[in-house]
Amino acid sequence: MEKVIDVQHLSKSFGENEILKDIDFSVGKGEVVCIIGASGSGKSTLLRCINLLEKPSGGQILYNGENILDDHHNIYAYRTKLGMVFQQFNLFNNHNVLKNCTIGQIKVLKRSKEEAEKVALKYLKVVGMDQYINAKPRQLSGGQKQRVAIARALSMEPDVMLFDEPTSALDPEMVGEVLTVMKELAKSGLTMLIVTHEMQFAGEVSNRIVFMDKGVIAEEGSPEQIFNAPKQERTKEFLKRVLK
Amino acid sequence: MIWDQILDWFNPMIEFLVQAAKIVEKYWPMLLRGAGMTLFVSILGTIFGTVIGFIIGTIRTIPLAERGFKRGILKIINAILSAYVEFFRGTPMIVQASVIYYGSLMALGIDMDRTFAAVFIVSINTGAYMTEIIRGGIISIDKGQFEAAHAIGMNHTKTMFHVILPQVMRNILPALGNEFVINIKDTSVLNVIAVTELFFQTKSIAGNTFKYFETYFVTCLMYLAMTLIVTRILRHVERKMDGPDSFNIIPGNQMQVAKPEDLLKKK
Image (cartoon, rainbow over all chains, first blue to last red; front, side, top):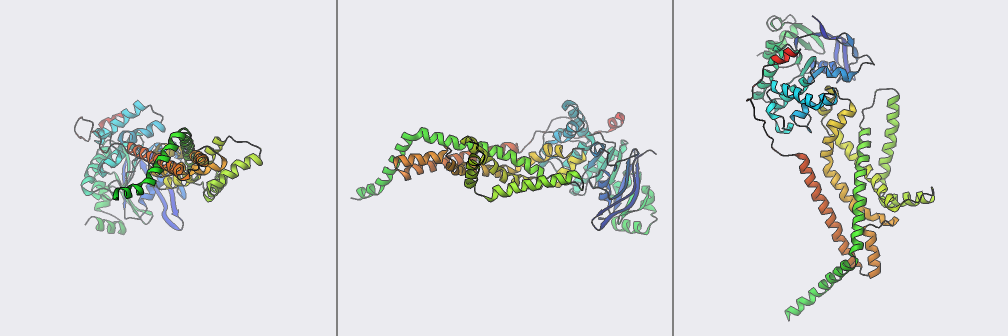
């Protein structure tokens, strides 16, 4: 399979604290990969390193074969190829729903306002938020905010979508609406990399599951293999704790 | 008689008000011109000061590069800017006015227009305060806002202009109003360089009429009126910026999580 993102020997430390240790990991085109693991295992940091919100301490990240950690690589252009969905939504508080989805297209991709609005509406429809284009973020519920955040990322028409625990900050009754949207996206063939604590969801949508523990990838494999026949002792232990 | 006693008691007060009214009647053009100058200097000073504050506050929050030439330059600029802030916050405006006005006249031989000097002094003074207010405003914006902007490919400048500074502007409006009110009052110190603002005019009138209490009383009310009006206007602007509490739902097909098949087709 064609590798879109290929992470090689990636490491990241905050001071003395080594969060990621020699990570080798790749995402193929059209693949849906879920990263699971305990809090503090480094899964969010890995995701944030991939779009350079955290600067890796060592190693390489290849995007379509090009090393984006190269000094001359334009990280702003690279980031437009990755859609990011945050745990805390992070919608732009000063803009309404529509503007949240158009501003990146207009200011970064240099699309015209008309085109940007057309694209934004298309994806707002995908997440079921097209009726709320006039609302400000503070007027929306958590689930609605997260769906707009997904539409905002999709509006940039990225190659890969990164989800950083997209349902962890939501009230239980709102988790469903966000997961439904994500399942639909996964079915559509979008390349997705998801950090999540929702094990059932991970099992349903992903082609591959990566289990991280203490800064390393402890085990990876198909959902069936990871959930039904984990090879590593620590994977078994983790699953026993979360699947109770 | 009790009525006479009450009248006796009120007489000085009525006399005082009559005198005050006479001063207003006779000197109102002078007073109005003074108030106009006060407003002119404080409005321009607040606007320029805010612009200075936004520029410097933004520069001071640029993240330092890890190494290299840029880091050095930024460090030097930051040191200069922080000296500017410390100096103008740490000295009284009345002294700054004298030093700058007489200093440029005597040491540099520049005879500044007094009104220009007034606006200049109030601007850089306000700028020093606004810098810190805006720096605080930028720091207080949630880190997630920066990250979200970076994640869709915005650089630092775009992030600032389209996401952060509009939010800072809203958040600092109360502090900005505060600065404006302070400026209306503090321009009175500019009388030391003979700027014809309200306090200067009042002093001249009082010196002519020897009616100190009455004259300053009228001026006092004029300052109060100006600050109250300005405060009300800014409140209104704040509410305007917040927008309505409700929003319109665009009627259309009910909440269907649309099938992203078209999404696939596009690729």
